[in-house]
Length: 112
Image (cartoon, rainbow, N blue to C red; front, side):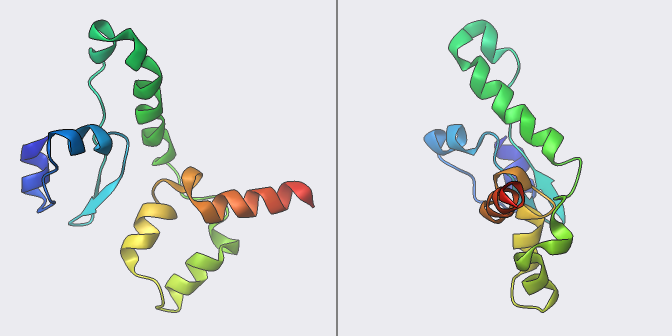
């Protein structure tokens, strides 16, 4: 993983930082990088299975954009030039299921 972080000019995390980086999205050079645990982790530590599943769920999320992008206030702010492109890559085109704006909008839609 160090090689990939260096290759894309990302700050290489410490040993503890690597563990915290699993399942998170990093944007560098117009690419999304998602460190995930190796599947063999479960063989050595069966209690890691749920963490492994969560790490890999992010990959499925990355296959589509946020379904609420057309009504998202944050995306409109991006279009107006008020929010940087990196924000949109991480939230609207990235981990949108965990985006607090998506969570809020989804809740509002359920209530109505």
